[in-house]
Image 1 (spheres, rainbow, N blue to C red):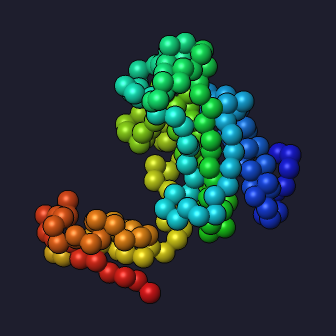
Image 2 (image 1 turned 120 degrees about the vertical axis):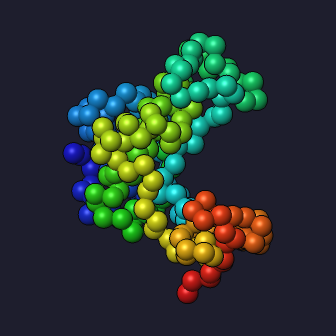
Image 3 (image 1 turned 120 degrees about the horizontal axis):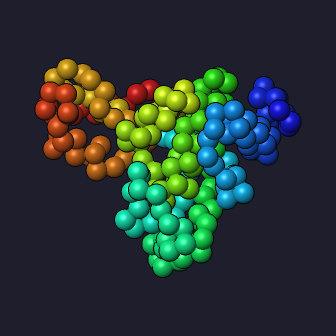
Length: 194
């Protein structure tokens, strides 16, 4: 692999270069159908909840499982695709890269490759059954590990099961009593760790 080794990544450019090369290897070795000429790369230092993300235009009525016709596809707002997928941006989170070991980061990249593959084929992506099946094929996690401490932790009041983590105040936090857990149907409690 060209570029810096994963343990030599020191800058955002290094992270993009190493991650791009790793993804190209996965595409070649694991038969992932992604066009990298339609992928832009960036690094986020602000994200706390997502290790990485595929940013893409929303295409009304696109559905995972139904191939999209890029000749006629139109994004929300009326922009036409004109025969090829709209470019997508793969946003890598610096904090996640620093917190994860190499295997966790590689799994995160394979996870994002599935999103890119689905988007380029179907015009949308999700974490549904097709994603889970492909994640099994690529030995990728369906949900990336937590890498930042949340400001709020919501739990079931009956069994203390973790319901959600939130990194800022929101309706779920401020109105936790009006929500019910999926495990016991009980109200939620809010903890502020640390």
